[in-house]
Image 1: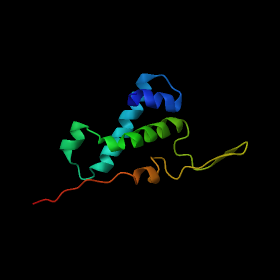
Image 2 (image 1 turned 60 degrees about the vertical axis):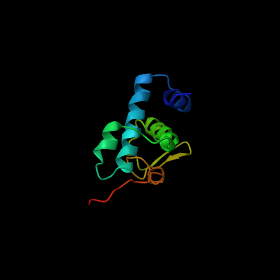
Image 3 (image 1 turned 135 degrees about the horizontal axis):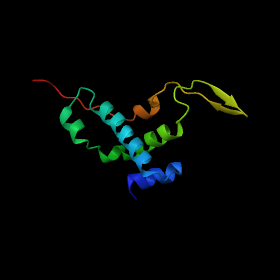
Length: 105
């Protein structure tokens, strides 16, 4: 099963353009955290280590599910409560990414 098919199944969406957009955004978020000091080679290659594919899907699904409620900090309707600590990807997801850095010689 491809990442696109997996995400489509997770969020019950069939628009491949939209799904690809969110997969690309999630990939960018992971690469920016993975290579924080602008290691342009890895970022330009756009190669995401396989161990982050599950996280990629979860971040993309989070972004899709949060559409229309970006930046919401509190919401209560019919005993459904929504709180977003930030308008970005939650820290608990970002904490799974181990940044790669190097030494300048």
